[in-house]
Image (cartoon, helix red, strand yellow):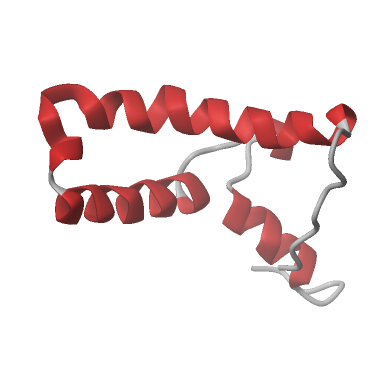
Length: 84
């Protein structure tokens, strides 16, 4: 996946970044901070890997028509006419 940098002071593009941060905050960090989990860096790293896997492979995304990011990637990269 190609990384696209946004220009500074471009709020119309920054909205996607802000939304991503909000999801991380609402769905991951608030749960992580309960019970002092964030005090153990090894446990935090493990939880981040679990979150990334869940977010990319299991969590449906409204902006992707209910697909996961992985499902969308697969649909965009498969040759035309090929089915999964």
